[in-house]
Image (cartoon, rainbow, N blue to C red; front, side):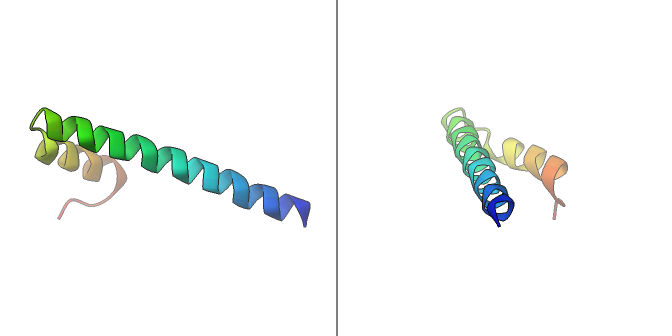
Length: 50
């Protein structure tokens, strides 16, 4: 039971860190007018570009 809770907590911490970094990168891309390029790069790495 304890290992199950630890796994959930570690996954949550990882997800929060990932989303925090993602949002900062998006804000930075918007500031330098490169959101389209950033989104294409992101989709190439993490998903399918549509």
